[in-house]
Length: 91
Image 1 (tube, one colour):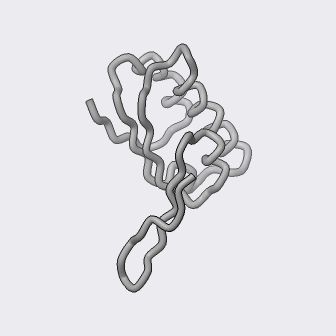
Image 2 (cartoon, helix red, strand yellow):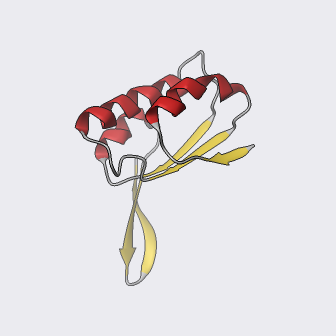
């Protein structure tokens, strides 16, 4: 099952119970309107999704905020070069 969500930290945190039925979460710029404190809160929520108790195997996040890298096991940096988006770094 693939579900695309608009971000709301409180709803996302409460819905950890959905972890058993969601296989992938895609978030596009989930930190756009969040201050630094709320971004840190989001990172902690994401880490719980990947904890031993949770069972969400994959989360894809598009962001400009590097704080979210703390919750990731793989990061891809993408740049537009000569009109074409290219992965320039993976770690």
